[in-house]
Structure formats: structure tokens, C-alpha cells
Picture: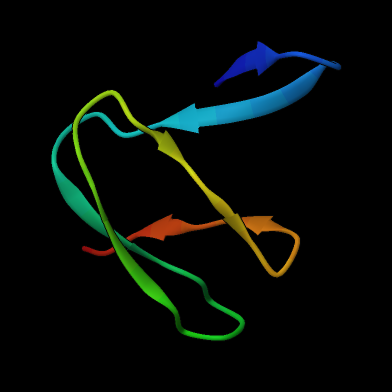
Length: 48
């Protein structure tokens, strides 16, 4: 995690992966180093 802008914490993907929202079940593909987006007010989680 790192801070960006107004003290917001951001998570970055360690490797190419799929992330999902545990609330609405939306899924996205992210590349290594990309910021993992927020959805429904929470940081999306990596699929295992």
C-alpha cells in the first residue's frame, strides 16, 4: 500500500491477475504494478 494524493491508501497488483468486488461481484483484469481499483467503497480483492 502507498499513499496517493489526499492521504488515500492505494494497493498495487504484484502480478497480472483478476480482481473482484466481494459486494457486487464485479471482476476486472489488472496488470502488474497497476492500482487495484475500489468498488462499492472497498478495494477489490485478488482472485485466488
